[in-house]
Amino acid sequence: MATTGVSDLADRVEVELHEQGLTRTVRDLGVLRQVAGLLGAEDARARQRRLAEAQRELAGAEVRFRLDEELP
Image (cartoon, rainbow, N blue to C red; front, top):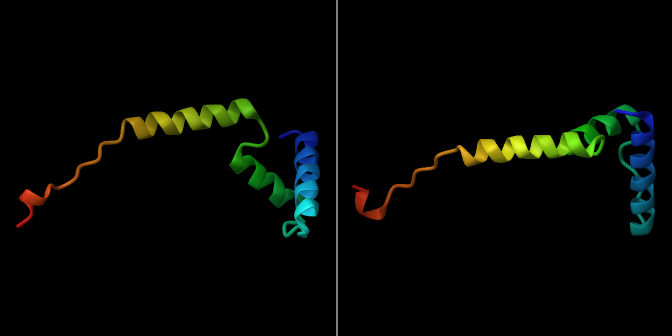
């Protein structure tokens, strides 16, 4: 993740917190970087790829429900 991405994210977080009258809880940029990575804020293309992968996995999932008449 590029340093500018973390800096931009930190700036956006600060603006949003200020507008809401809140203070930042996460002060460690390393932790903020990890959270940004989990949220996909570091790279929109990578985030889209992860979302597409999750959608493919969900599309392949099979869910079965027992009907009331099948219950003992």
